[in-house]
Image (tube, rainbow, N blue to C red; front, side, top):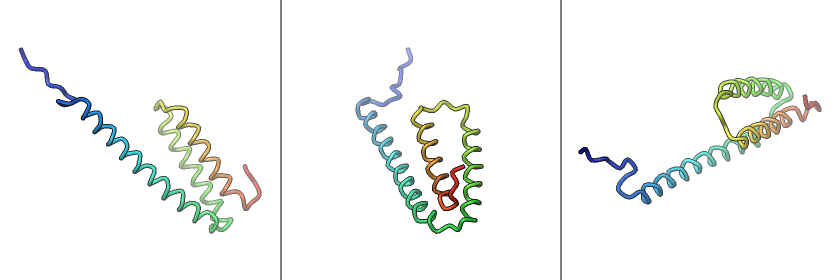
Length: 103
């Protein structure tokens, strides 16, 4: 009879710990990226001219719509959708603030 190999490894607890450590590392990298991007946006948005804000707003809307269409068939948790909507609206308001409109 063929011997069945344990795909998790010889020590499931150690392997689980390694997976958890890998996931923590992945989350830390994502958090670092988000922090850098948000600080870049915080520094950049106030320095845009009204004309630049209009251009950036339209490009942002186009890219968000494209991304949403692309992932529309992929099941995601509700938290993903609510965070996406909240952040999108936050930046759209920031881009339109100087114009006095909120579209």
